[in-house]
Image 1 (cartoon, rainbow, N blue to C red):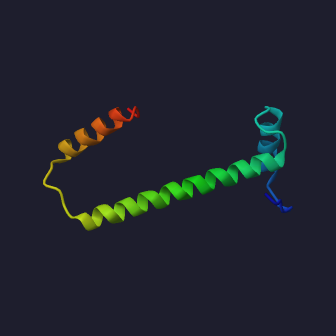
Image 2: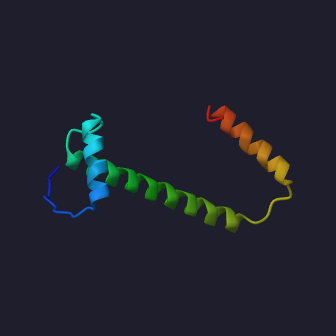
Length: 85
């Protein structure tokens, strides 16, 4: 993948945080930090878009006759089945 060089400006506080991340060994250099932050933001934006799409789909499907407790139990069961609860 082609790389493009960028120049950015950060606050002193942000610079200290960046230096601490490198010093801790979590990242090898500043570029790794920024690429990781960008990847996280892209992932989060994709998750939000998926949630929006699901909400729109649910809104269009109409109302449920189930009680909030029944819905909660269904969700909890589904999460347990996928090992997320």
